[in-house]
Image: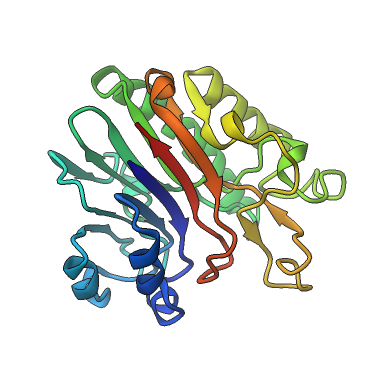
Length: 253
């Protein structure tokens, strides 16, 4: 089964850049999207439905902001919009689909780069999300959490770790949170299969960063430990260019 997570940075713009045609060629069984930046009635799903996808969309209250979605060819037993934490759900950041033998989540973690207020919001989100997942795992131990985590974990995951040491997304306390999340029983699936540097999933639009591969690996498919023996392959797909992010792939058996 092929699972993709993709921050599309505005699904309508991404569709204008060929997202739907790319999906038809890539053929994921399940794709989780982040930063859709649209209300459900603003997203044209007709071609997706014709390709066999069921579409589940959880948007932010604020128009043109945040938002997550799951498109799936595998019929879910249950879909949950949000995580039950009001300030998170108002921003449309979490959606989950249960498939019987595992659950898949699409999550858009906050960015803290716009200032101290949002960095505080991000740290609060991280603490609350960890607690939420600790509880959720009791009922749904087999979890894959795809998403834009807005954090690089280690120096290997960022093009200039020294200069970015004080940048939101690579702060010591954020990196520590990822370490703690992994220690709580999750696997960074990409690193199971690939230990090489220079593998990134986001590039600034400034200074020709993507052409020079000056990027950050902030998009992950994290899998809970009980999923370890089902992991088959993981990859980053930088040739897909509908966004400042690129898709990240996980194949499970």
